[in-house]
Length: 320
Image 1 (cartoon, rainbow, N blue to C red):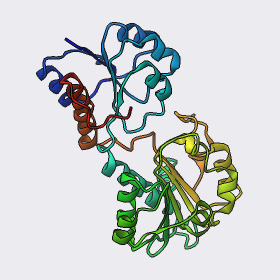
Image 2 (cartoon, rainbow, N blue to C red; image 1 turned 90 degrees about the vertical axis):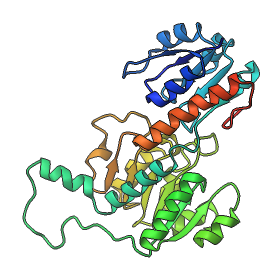
Image 3 (cartoon, rainbow, N blue to C red; image 1 turned 45 degrees about the vertical axis):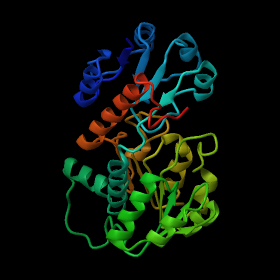
């Protein structure tokens, strides 16, 4: 019988599915994750690991655990796993790519609104007992109706975000992707553009791509200097896709107008980060998938990957 280690405290729906299948399942029930030594000690005693992006499953870790039959990632992203080493060792890896589409699109949309209307900054002024009198020209935000939104990575989440922008505000959609998506272009009246054109034309740029060597710190000084001075930058994908020092400089110099981040570089962000004090910035602590519906579906899919594998089937969400 396969022994499964669930290394994070996931919703019960996933645990129940594994145990109903008759799999011997060990669950880490603490709110804080295991430290590296605890994780290594535990994985050495199990055949399958249900993991998360909070753990660094690098080449050394995988080599020490070459006995693993499967890694099921409780996340859509998997840049924390050394995929090349996993392939070399014959360890299949699966993920949960469809579970958080709506939740993440919602948080991107919320951050766009929060930045445009300076909501986080103005809320802090109330906490600081600085509500102040009515001033017609103070702390003005911007309206989004009819503006151009640029999507960097038109996958499931990017598409869902674009649908919200077009539907709610009639925003014009442009996008940059590995390849054009003609079906989506027709549905959203979207236009495929080069990266430089995306930077120049967009009033809002929202990032929805995977973190790869190609996209790492793609939004840096070069990119910000080519954006409109009135543009908003939104990143709910991975913090490593933007260069945080360059972003801070761009905001301080008014090279761009504002930023909304659910991911930071590095992560977690330190409490004294200057972004947290800026008027035109909204930051949330990587909560894109933090809805009841999304986290339950992530648990279900992560468990299903394991169940399918143990039945001799190919998991629906197999990466390698």
